[in-house]
Length: 494
Image (cartoon, rainbow, N blue to C red; front, side, top):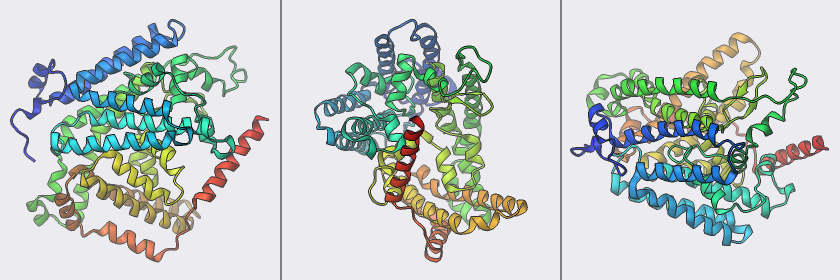
């Protein structure tokens, strides 16, 4: 769809940076997004140093994080940011007035329902993505947080410990948060613009100064020669992530704009390009579409780390890890040898949210329901549903192949290497095939694309599911395994 005149400088938020937008030729909404995140990065360093738990009370830290978050939302999205505040306050009412057995249900229905209505209105307001950073992004993150807290609160005050998995038991919230705690969790300046979603207990531990200490206590420091607990600094992790952010930005400004996804359905391209060459170009344009996600998610991770949030413990080499809130693992994405491995390392916090609120709680068909929820959460563009329905099919087929064939290739190193090379190539092409409609958005280009590649992944996946035996892991079996894990942990605690 052609952009109207002046679209590069259109925004729903502040026009303060319009001169910079005009100078660089970059859409104003993107300029506002980057400016807010860079300012949030500076504020995060200041927050960690001057409003640390030893210098300021939890209430002051909550209030500062909330007020700055609200300001960033208004700066970026103008009066559209009211949608964020309306949803937050509606669900605060639900959390305090709903009966305990229904807190998670009502919160889920209201949050997802409001998000879906906004997605529908967004099509008419912004058409097919004239603005790349509109209010729906923060609304999606807030929806994740609302439903996460509601489920964990239900686990904490509405269920017995024996009914919970080990993870649910660890993250269960035992009392309703105050209004200030609730607003700070949902609207804090570290995550209001680009996320990620985090668990409520982790966030409160961070605000109260227990976040790093809790992780350090898991290690026997005396055996490592320490007289007292170390004080890990996030500076190194932040600098490393900012380097990745810079590289991603350069790739976005150069590679992404030179390899548009729309070219793979250009009539001249389809007429002159052989099938295998089309698949190769599909891989190239999919790679070119990734840097903007690498940029946004890595910068958001760096902002949280700069504030002192995101410490996940110590690895086997004794290195401090700051990846609790990381949304991707670029190396694992680019070297993934299975569809499952790719998904687990892409948009990690959203995958964790889907698992906690849907997959672990679905009584039937958890894989299908999780993909459907993911599509609904992303929006109502038809391309999203093509992507996630195709994803269900390919995931099931990939699982069947792995369960039936992988063990034949583990007997020798050459066979294992050959297996990894083939599965890497197939995985990367399967991902490209699956996500193309996600970028195209509309029905017509999606169908045209799939016709141009003969629906080959759909056909192959169906044949695999028809020919290979499937050994599904039922929900009851998963529940039993989770309960066994919980019992094991309890026995160790004794």
